[in-house]
Amino acid sequence: MELLVAIAIGVLTFSGVYLILRARTFSVALGLTLFSYAVNLFLFVMGRLHTGKPAVLSDATNYTDPVPQALVLTAIVIGFAMTAFVLILALRAHTELGNDHVDGVEKPKKENKPRRKSNRANKKRVGATR
Image 1 (tube, rainbow, N blue to C red):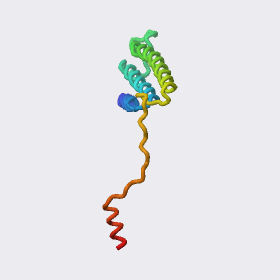
Image 2 (tube, helix red, strand yellow):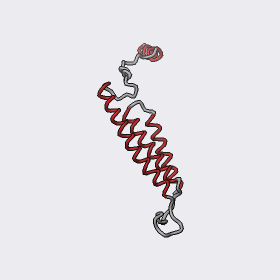
Image 3 (tube, helix red, strand yellow):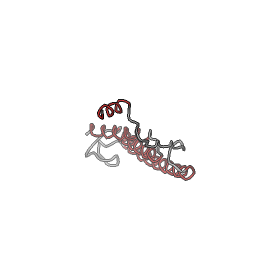
Image 4 (spheres, helix red, strand yellow):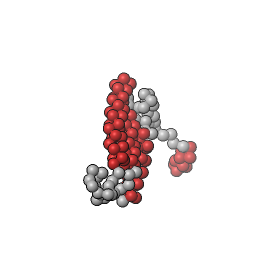
């Protein structure tokens, strides 16, 4: 089970960093969200994975550690606020600038010009007609 959680944290981290490095604001916001999920899962796992143990409120001698759960709940609230702020900032930039590029300036796309045939291809064609 620990291996599965570690793989999930790695996939979330990789996807988050990949999306943060993109040039579009929506991708950056989605990457920040995935990265915050990875951090929350990491914090939750820091208290060790237990099954069948009661919460700290019962009379049991073995119970789960409530500190990681409290940290994750706080991080979730902060993450929602940060995501909402980034989305509002991205919407404002989109309305002001007219595009969603992170630098505010979108590079012009290259036009598809017809390819010039190389001299080698021309020689083959000329040789074929002779």
